[in-house]
Amino acid sequence: CLTRSHRAMVFYETLILIHAKFPPNETKLLMRETARVIVERDGALFRILDLGWRHTAKALWKKEVGHIFYGRWYSLIWGGGPKAKQEVEETLVHNTGVVRQLTIPISSPNKFYSNRSTYYPLIKPLTPPLTHHVPMQQVE
Image (tube, rainbow, N blue to C red):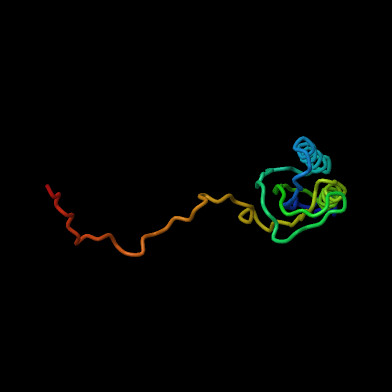
């Protein structure tokens, strides 16, 4: 029987929105600090994905920054206990660059975020090729 402190690791995905006025070197330090918090609480950081610059669906407002219409999204996939989750959330909430953050448990490894294979979907032809068509002969 596992005691309360020795239960199996839970997998989480943390989505972070960082505003555009936050310097890139500070963003790098924020990711390092978040990784440090996870590892110090006996967790494991599996992947940090930079999802790029995206516009928000509506204007967001942050006290120190003002209105925000776009920002840079990051996805962290990691495993750890409840204490690690609480510490990660506290680290992100108290950072001035983070506009929004959401940490959700992942029920199975199949639910991990996966990149799109292509940007544009593959379009299948709606009709079969014209096999009855005979090309025109060249006019001289």
